[in-house]
Image (cartoon, rainbow over all chains, first blue to last red; front, side, top):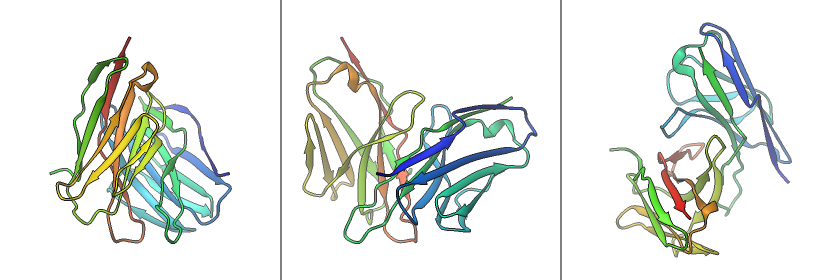
Amino acid sequence: SQTIHQWPATLVQPVGSPLSLECTVEGTSNPNLYWYRQAAGRGLQLLFYSVGIGQISSEVPQNLSASRPQDRQFILSSKKLLLSDSGFYLCAWSVEAPGAVEKLFFGSGTQLSVL
Amino acid sequence: RKEVEQDPGPFNVPEGATVAFNCTYSNSASQSFFWYRQDCRKEPKLLMSVYSSGNEDGRFTAQLNRASQYISLLIRDSKLSDSATYLCAVRGYGGATNKLIFGTGTLLAVQP
């Protein structure tokens, strides 16, 4: 069965520090991968998605970047964190299959606090 | 207008009650619809897909109304454990990734 691992679970970082969040998926190949952010009291905002290795699409201009160095690995980074980067970051995956509804599954999330 | 809208609630209901949530979407070409459940400080978990003819999973019933562009979730015989935020999600048509757009969620609090 497929599983998704995301770490760390919580992170407290000072303003201006770098960030690296990692996500890996097991039990499937060539998944679509996503990074979402959920700010306090707000909905899920799609930040990046990837349909393959090295293929990254950004949804909103921001202080963050994403990379996909391997098929089942997705990394979210920042060179210098801002206070506004605080939030709950969620990695997610899906797989397209002919005739099937494509469903999205989330990792356990990282609660990032930038102070 | 937001792409996907939900009443944020909270919906406070007694145990055993029936409660219904609606979610409206703006893109008439949307193809796939889902309900997720999210507990506090946890990730959203897929509750059920929503099919054109409506579908049921135990105490949960999901329906789609394409003409009025909304989906609904009905929970019968509410349990304390049903307390959570319920997110609707809609996938549009077209684009390489068929991105899933989420509503902001409806908070349900089931009271003893």
